[in-house]
Image (cartoon, rainbow, N blue to C red; front, side):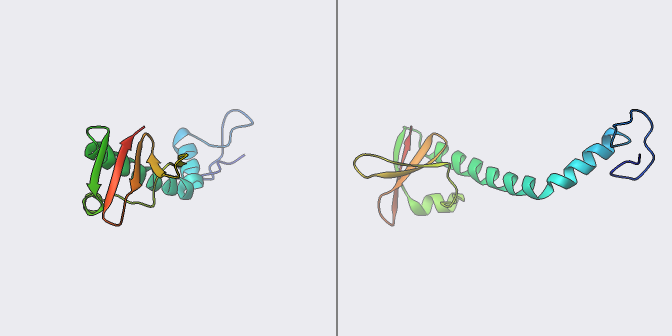
Length: 112
């Protein structure tokens, strides 16, 4: 049997697929590259959004200009959930930090 990564002959157990840990890691990294990059990019955006909301919302409930969040690099396309309350208010959450668009200029940030 030959190594799936480098093609060298494998010595040892009959069910081994790789000649060493480096080849096993390299092979698996290549297999998962596309999905890992996508997930890494999404998680980075969620982390950035959370950090911005958390640093802006010191008191647990804050009204802030939408332009301020934009200036800090907040991306309104990335959030973890949407909650619609009985009164019809819709909040988008990034983990435990939520926001509601009040009008085109202002955002209300709340901590759940």
